[in-house]
Length: 321
Image (cartoon, rainbow, N blue to C red; front, top):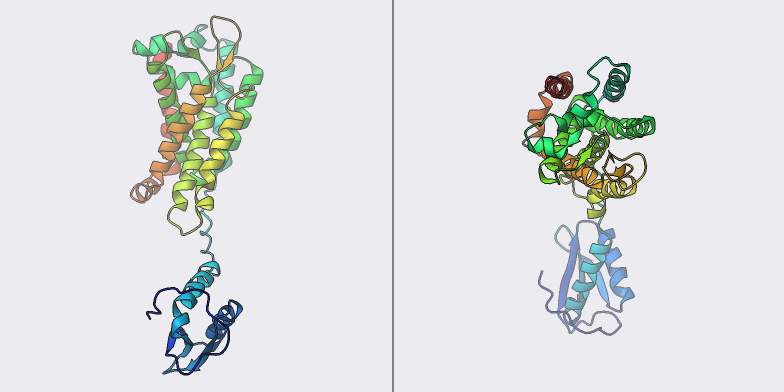
C-alpha cells in the first residue's frame, strides 16, 4: 500500500465517487477496519469499509490517503500491546545456609582473636595495610574482610551482609553468590591497597557487602537484557543498586572503617565503590549467555568451599608471616 504523501487536513463528508479510492488498511476482521474508520472519522477523514477478496478493506479518497495513513500509524503505535513481562527468574534454595556460614566466619574470627586462640598480633597481621600489600602481602585483601574494630561495626556488617548475601544467593545460588562476593571484595581491596597511599589502612566486611549488592544488581540487569521490555524495567535493578550504594555506602556504622593515624575511624567510601564496581563486573560476566551454562555445571557446595578456602589460605599466610 502506498497512500502517497501526507496532505493537509481534509474536508468532511463521504468519499466522492469521482475520486479514486485508496486502501489505507486491510484486515480479515471487520472489527479492526471499523475501529480505524472511527479514528479517521474523528479527525475529519471520511471513509468506508468494503469486503474485498477474503478480507475487509478500509477506503478513503485518494487525496486523504497520506493524512489517513499518518493517523493510523499514530493510532497503532499508541495502542501497541505492551511486551510481555519476563518470566520470573529461577530461585535457588539454601540461601540462608550461605548467610549462616557468613555469620559463622565473622563471629568465629572475632572469637579467636578475642579469646587468644591465635597470635595476639593477628589483627595487625590481617588488616588492609597498603604499604605492606605493595610490599607483597597480598593475603591482607582477604583477611581484612573478616576483621572489625568493635561490636557495632561487626553487627552492622553482619546485618547488611546477611540481607544482600541472601538476595544474591537466591538469584545465583549460595555457593556462586558468596564466591563472587569474596572474590570481588578481595580484588577491590587489592586495587585499593596497590593504588592507594601507603599509609592507608582499613578493616571490615563492608567491601564484601557492597560487592554482593553490585553482583546482584548487575546480574539481574544483564538477565533482563534478553527480554523485550521498556528500558525503565530493564535498567531498574542496576539503578536500584546504585541508589542503595549511595544511600548506605557513604556513612554510618555499616561502612568499612579506617583506623587512621589522625584520630577516629572514618568511612572508607572508596572501598565501597570499588566493591560495588568489581561485584557488578563479575555479576554481569556470569550472566552472559556463554558463561551462565558453564557456571551452572559447578556444584554450589564446591563454589562455596572455594570461597572459604580462599579465606583460610589467606589467614594461613598471614599467621605464618
